[in-house]
Image (tube, rainbow, N blue to C red; front, side, top):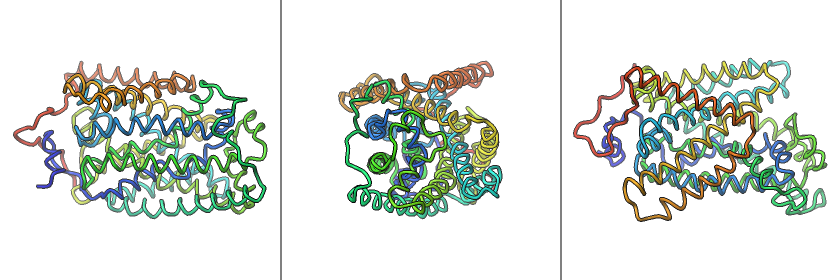
Length: 470
């Protein structure tokens, strides 16, 4: 019996998902979830919200999430299970708090595919107007659901192919962009990082709450703890590696785009309602062809690989919560042939399609989804930091106060300021979602289904596995 299987049985679960992912697959999964070219889609919004300090907003995001990745690494070592913050907070603090954390991150994961599909469908419709948005939505959802239902190996192969394609487009932009700057199309400046004329902490942190959208996904690697060959060690390394690489790529491309932006003051004042600011900078770098390449690549990246791995993440969260009887049991069923939670995958597909079609009818659909996603993720991250302190310092009496007290405290403080300065509407709707989760939790108690997780010590016999379907 391999060590990762023993890790799982220690908590009363059977190995049902297939351990097929190597470190490089996990790294690719995290990068494709974050999308190396993600800033291309929201560059203008972050630039405007930050008063032009778009690189500063991304830099703060990297710093904040480095601490979060460290806390993830501490908890995945202790609890190498699918479910991410749901399991870590539940086992670190208590099952009811874990339910709330799972509910909060669910707001992120269940809305992310809808946002990605919608952004991609709108962009492709702008490129090929003859095909309506709703048809693009259906096509993206159907393609991803089929691939994910074929098994985690198929998903891993597809993400590698798409990741290489995104990186090629990114380096083409950076190559032409840097050359344009060197030949006089723009001048080097530190203002994208720090501009004394517009600087303000509330302004910059508010912009960071938007920029964080580009980073969401590194945490999704933790959802694959039961499918990683290297167990918890590989998960921690992959999360740190993906965050570091993505952070460098995000900062590089936004800095080049900021320098090439033809009218920075107009962008700050008027914003970027059409979402074309980055493509305008690409056109300055090398003409309309580069703008078109970047726009189409962004649409495909958001609509296929990114939304595909997002669907994987939320399906594993639903599987983990259903396995613990905190969601309907049919979500815990695993396909015997493919070793994937097929029911959860299909449910996510249906919800993503319905939400995407609905939000397409709203003028503020994309902005609303973005704000809600960030609020849910950041709230769950705050609870994650707290779980590190409670579990390691209070319960385990750890003397490693740097790793188990100082690091999570710093991370929680930075994220707290970001949440505090987030969009007010997102705060209100986010707290409504959390309140709804608390009501569901109360309903579970009243129904005699108090949230419980299998013990923290080794058990004598593995728990009965979730039912499998053919």
